[in-house]
Amino acid sequence: MPFTTETKEEILDYCENHLPEDDWYEEQFDFILDEDLRERIIQEFKAIRFAYKLYEGITAEEENLVFEVRNQILAYASIYEAVIENVIETYYRDTEEYDKLTHEMVLKPYSLPQIKLDKLKNELDHDGKQIIPAFYARSKKDSPKVRFADKCNTAEELGLIHSFIGKDGEIVNLPTEIKNIYSYRNCIHLLAEKRKDITYELDLSKKAYRRMRPFIDQIKEKLREDEKIS
Image (cartoon, rainbow, N blue to C red; front, side, top):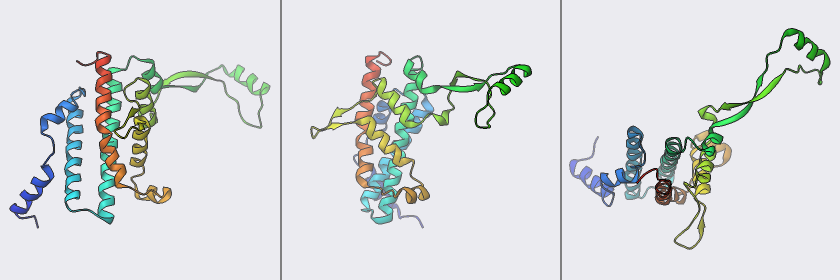
C-alpha cells in the first residue's frame, strides 16, 4: 500500500531538501564527453544522495544501516571507476601510461617445422615435461584483466589524482583511499563478506562521498593544465 499523498510529499521534501539542482550535476561532470555515460553517472549520484537522506530520515539501524552503507559504497565506487576509466580513455590514449595499463608482454607459441621440433624434443628434456618454442610478444589486455587498482595507479601517474592536505591538516592519500573504497565494493557479496569477515562502517560510506569533491576537482584541474578542457 503506497504512502498517502501528504506523507509522500513530506518524505520527498525532506530527501530533496539541500540537494543540488540538476545544473550542478551537469557542471560537475561536464568533462565526461560520453553523454550516455555522463547521464548515468549523474543519475547514480543523485539517487545515492536521495537514498542517504531517506535512510538518515528514518535513522536506519542494524540491518537497514548495513544495507544503506553497502549501497553507498557500491554506488560511489562505481562512479570513481567510471570516471577514471573514461578520462584515461578519452584524454590520455596516446600516453605511455595508457599503453602500459592496457598492454602486457605474453608468451606465444612459435611454429617450427616438424623436423626441427623433433630435434628440439630430443635435445631438450626437463623433468619429463614437453618443451615447446615460444617468444614474448606485446599484447592488448582483455578488459577484465585491467584491475581498478591499476587504473587508479595510472591516474596517479598521469597526475589526475594525488594526495592533499585535509581540513584537519593531515595528509590524505586520495588514490589509496579510493582503492580501499573499491576493495570493499568488490566484497559486496554475502559469501565474500563471510569469508573475509567484512564489517561495513558508516564512516567509510561518508568518506566515499566526501572524497568525491577533491576527486572531481583534481581531475578537472589536471585536464585544464594539460589543455584538454577549458
